[in-house]
Image 1 (cartoon, rainbow, N blue to C red):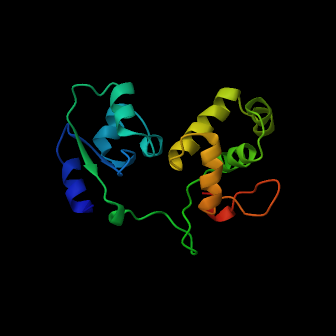
Image 2: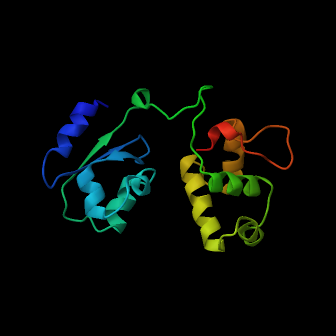
Length: 161
């Protein structure tokens, strides 16, 4: 998407704008939207735009949503062309899920609550567009995020921010 076009929406006072990918996930948003929600850009990126509108009280606001085409997507990449899409905690959680570790035991291993583990699993499901944990692990192997032929499962470091 033309960055100048998107920036032109930032110049209009009171207008909130968000750029989303084909799935409806926020790629970037205007400063007005960040300020209106009282959040950091990293808190908004990766969330479904409809969740933002419904849960964060933006009813009645003017929001322009622009959908990014697949060709325009420029992922953050390493030198080998892999996307850095996981945090260190995400990678530890993914490794545990791939190893079949139950949520309660995984929570103890990574020093989080069970709810914290579920939060990270939900984010991983969203990032990899997987409907469940089994599909999550399968997609992670298929996309090269998890190293093939190793046990216990290990995330390829090139995918970790």
